[in-house]
Length: 95
Image (cartoon, rainbow, N blue to C red):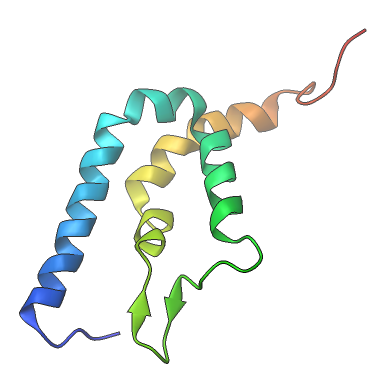
């Protein structure tokens, strides 16, 4: 999708920079509990009745698109996701 004006491109770059800054500030939390937070966030974004992330006919891109596709956030959430998959008793209760 092309953005014609300089202000639109500058706004997108500013959003990407702010997401990177927010990820760096929240990195300790994301390293410890990133996978559950990301899973809950994705469920909220893709719920029924939610607006689309990219609406091509209207020429609209949601801020959530940039958050979901950000590589630093994906990298910070990966360790807890791997640990959760390795744990054999995840979600089971012991009695």
